[in-house]
Image (cartoon, rainbow, N blue to C red; front, side):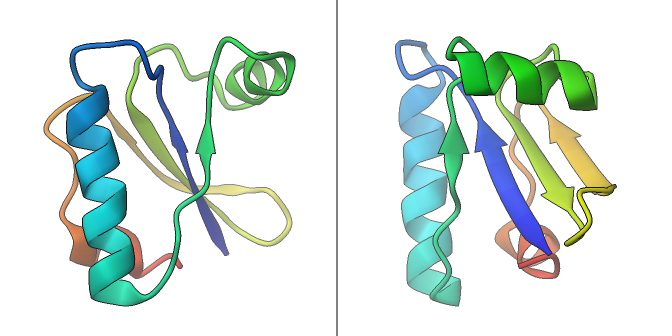
Length: 85
């Protein structure tokens, strides 16, 4: 499984998301990949999984099937997300 964090860096919530990613790595040892929804890769990803709100955290199976999605703030707990890593 994999987890992806989709967010825009030039926003009010960016600091909160970056702190979450840092804390997640410190507590679990796993790094969460990020994706900017305004890049060509991000646009395709967001269209595929119907993501319209940011920040969004998506848990995917190895085959690309969505397992769980957390939209907006507040962000989920680290233990909720670490189950999918």
